[in-house]
Length: 179
Picture (cartoon, rainbow, N blue to C red):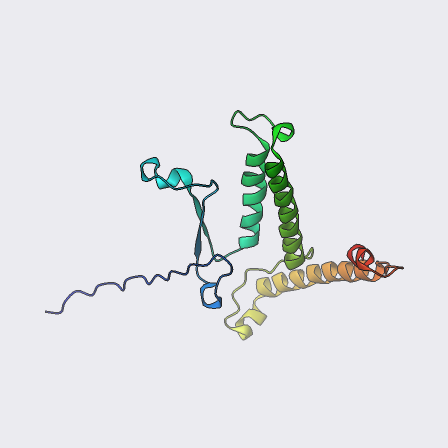
């Protein structure tokens, strides 16, 4: 009688870093912990009440960071517990923190825009395991031709927009930013 097979246990890796994520850990799902208030954590309070935590999936971490900044932390600093805006009553440190969060949020948004761009090509969901069979299937050929026509229009428009851009008449950092 053979012994029943036990499934392999999942393997976990723990990396602790406060500056950067090591290359070998960059592809793993990542959990983050934030302690937004200074001071010791008292066990009786319950750790979940004093520590913010969440999971960064293997997907778009910049988008998740942007949502955290714009939907949670910035509004949290702008409003009191009763929901009223508190910009006039904020201390200088909170105002500075809020200003820095706005700048950082803007930089994250800009990085997302630079990474994703403004051109999106739709790829049809077609199984192309056997190219000879696919080339004989009218529906597959029709879907690919439609996608090609759409891509041609999108790329032609993008090329036209790029060629119509006016180069900066002056040199310097501001001219480069505007360009």
